[in-house]
Image (tube, rainbow, N blue to C red):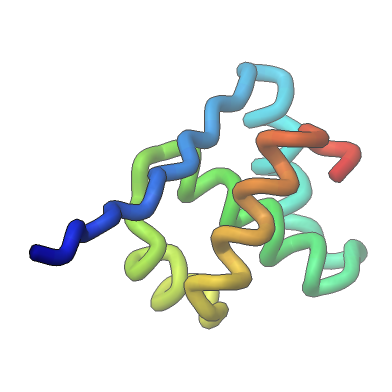
Length: 79
């Protein structure tokens, strides 16, 4: 019998200050598009959206979402 391994869900938790900064970044028209998209990914993840929902909204792949979630959890806004 094969064991099925579930993927570990990456939980993104942000402070109010981080939320404010990410919201500001996500609305920016002067920051590079990649930073704006990254901010949106982290905000949606923190709000409990699934990778599929984030992928559809932000037009990115699931591996890209996982990458940015891991990076934010490890390094915060500096990541």
